[in-house]
Image 1: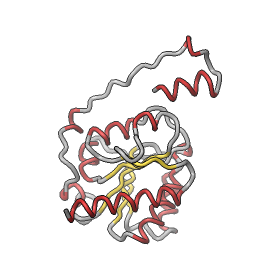
Image 2: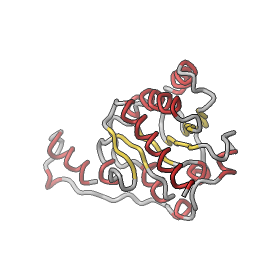
Image 3: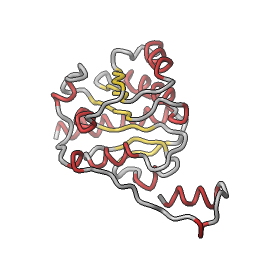
Image 4: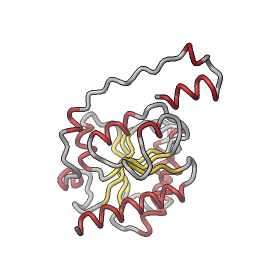
Length: 199
């Protein structure tokens, strides 16, 4: 992305601009483009109610993803929205700590840790939005897949994310490490989805 190129050339001075080039990702997006929005059966697969508002994280459980802040944000938002659920798809060194954190925050019954999943379209079919809490990102594939599936993205405004997510148009951007701002974004999403259901 252009943001990554700027980081490499200007911010971190790793290489001069003339020695860098942006190579677009090649992704197989057709299975995601065929999705028609959140599916009740896909939600029930994870023991969520059909009317649950599901935020999904898809990726590694490693420090750069700042998933402790994501869980804090979710716990805060869930206190105001009992229909809110979190699907944590992936794995990594931090999984035991994150599972313990979910329990200590009192949201373990509202969070599902699925491990790695090969059928990603079924994951996005269960979601109302995708969330990314990273401290830095390249070009996040999960955000691209989510948008191909027609889902909004709630993400930290880092790395290549702003090249994909336009705040207020196809998602919401928040600063990194600010769980309170991410919680407000989750609640804003809930309100938008509720009004769409009512109308």
